[in-house]
Amino acid sequence: MKDHAELSEVFNEDEQRVNWHDETLWFVRQKRDKASHQIPDWEELREAASQIKHNVLSNLADYLEQFEQQASNNGIRVHWAADALEHNKIVHGILKRHGISQMVKSKSMLTEECHLNHYLEEQGISVVDSDLGELIVQLAKEPPSHIVLPCIHKKKEEIGDIFHEHLGSVKGEADPQVLTETARIHLRNTFLSRRAALTGVNFAVAETGEFVVCTNEGNADMGAHLSDVHIASMGIEKLIPKRKDLGVFLRLLTRSATGQPITTYSSHFKRPRPGQEMHIILVDNGRSVQLGREDFRNSLKCIRCGACMNTCPVYRRSGGHSYHTAVAGPIGSILAPNLDMKQYADLPFASTLCGSCSNVCPVKIDIHEQLYKWRQVIIKEGYGDKKKAAAMQAMAYTLSSPKVYRLAGKAGRWVIKHVPFAVNNPLNPWYKHRDMPDAPKESFGEWYRKNRK
Image (cartoon, rainbow, N blue to C red):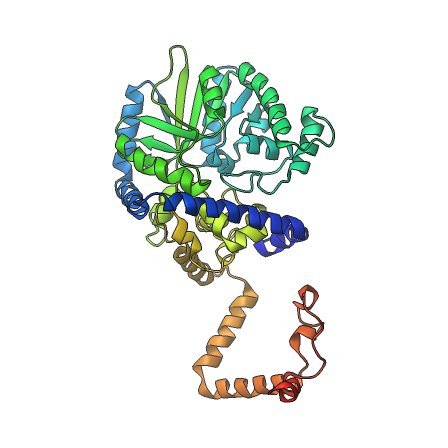
């Protein structure tokens, strides 16, 4: 399996796409900054959200039991799933009991994490993603590359080609308004013909047993209100204690994600309407293990806003698919090794540790510090890159011995004096990437003596 560095090379083959991807996400980051600066108590809100989440994680079992009791009292059927497979089996079981072979789904990163679509398709059940971005990547047979902007890596011309192939739009059509209308017409029939709808959960309130879904397109509402069966998939960390706490998180979420004051739709689901079944599946899938890791527990505070991705210089120029996991970017690089340390050992190293991710996180997760800690754990467990490990051991040996250190210094000075500029050396792995005029053939020492003032 290719690692982040190899997958990044694939993304970087299209330089224009890389530049566009970088600039677009930085534009979203700038919108976030403008929106946050308009709130005088922004930092107080971040601190409040962080402390609320800290309270939840410290008392998670109690809050989960309270939520289950209140939700059950409201008429919601509560299920528990230890892992992704159990979650998928529960969804399949609900659909099978009702004889349903088609389902509409709104954006849910948890179902991406569980690979629900693939599982249900193997069971003969058709799933249509109703979020516009998710629909685009589903038609393209790709996973989302961003947790808020699933098709941010696609240009409108490419989306036009996808819609022409799958939805019958005019060939060459690239007008966003026309493409959106094409998707709307396609999805309207889907909403009207599906008896089951699945949504994600942004926040669940332990006090009342309700859950909140935030969207900008209204697709979650349309699916849930027209269906006979509404299934909500929720990671156990999505709880907040009281309904009044929602005011804190709703002010933070969309400003951090897209720079909007609030999502267009913040929909509260408390009980099923008459004649409807409502189910909620509480999913662990490694979260309790992460909760037990003291150095990484704070990562469970994440509200999936994507702000860390929008600001990360590595993510912006390597693309979401290079992270080969459902949740990409800095936060995904913390969450993924908890699920499989060996498979995702490369991700904590896909960072400059600049700290920008921690600075924009609305719940004040120490993301860059956790990335550094994961690097230490991965190396100690023997999952690090062997060449890097050997280089670090050699450096440690050199720096710990004055004699070896002096010999290395002499060798370095000899190289500077006698070897031609490294950038002009075809043996240098960076030689093919240089974007500067050819350096002189002389050694650095010769060049310096000739050009010094």
